[in-house]
Image (cartoon, rainbow, N blue to C red; front, side):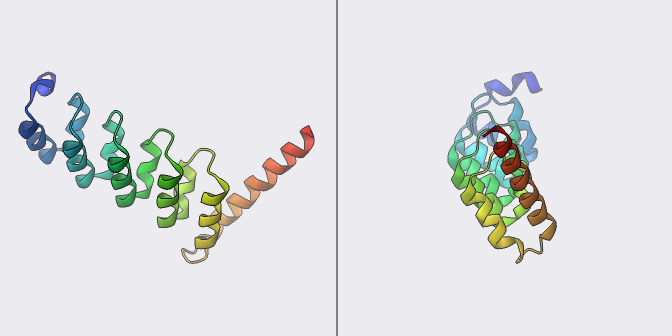
Length: 135
C-alpha cells in the first residue's frame, strides 16, 4: 500500500493522514492542508514532513514545544515560541540567541525550572572561560 501513496488525490491523502498522521512520511509533496492535518493530530509528525511551511512549523511548536527538535534551523520566532511554553525547549535548540535565553531565564522561576537555570548559567560560564582562554 505504501508504495502507492504518491498517486493519491488530496482527498485520499487527507483520509490516509486522518487515519494515521505518520503516513505523511510516504506522501510526496503533501499540500499545506494535509501537513496541517497531520500536525494537528500529532505535532511530532512534523519530523516526517520535508520542507514544512513556517505556518506548519509554528503550528507544531505551538502544540508541543519539543517538536522544535525536528525542525531544521528554527527561526528565532519559533525558538521564542517554544521556550515561552517551557524552558526545557532550550535543550532542543542549537545556538539559541541571547533573547531566547533571556525568555527562559525570565520564565524559569514561574515554571519552577531551577535545574534549567543552573544548566544555562553553567554553559554560559564555560563558554566565557573558553573564549577568555583564546583571547
